[in-house]
Image (cartoon, rainbow, N blue to C red; front, side, top):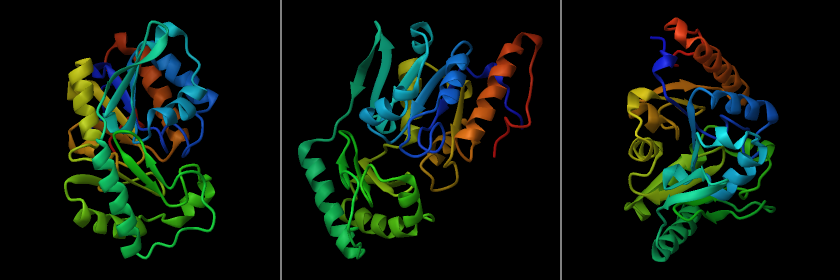
Length: 271
């Protein structure tokens, strides 16, 4: 069934692999499309990345006028924090942090699980291997700043991380353990995933499930975008930023013509 874009009031997107390549700054073309879309729809970004990663990866490439940016909302670390543009700057609305003892327990569990999985630390790493993101602790096999060509080749099918996750699930069952990105494992409080982000959008912005449209590159079962689809949000799977740009162009074109009635598109179909 085609999606009626006219009924959608907010477009929500994943960051890594959807709006940008992994850990790279958003390009000008994507920025221009998002800025134009803000003339017609609100726009939200949900990612497992921390706010500082949003600043570098998303805001670092964004160029909109301040009037448009007020319709843009950022939900880092799977919506355990929320930022909006207010009085000329990005302001923190809320943040749900892990307690120090919880972080310590997670870090210790990573150390044990990596040994149990016989993970061999690379001779060279790029940045922190285990990163404290405030409301989330994230392991990245080669470090948080690893070049895409290196991180993408380590565990393309996720099987290595599934082994590590299996040990973590037994060691820290009170936490949520999820495979994220191309070489990462994320640990949060129970129930924190992108479906949680959808609930926070509903609570804070007032949009119903039927008014939302989600774009993501990991909507397959087990992917970190899949909880959004499971929550009932109309979702479109993309293969990367270039396909996302095509979808955004379609939404913009259909929004421009919405006063003429309902329009459908071959791109705007569930996949």
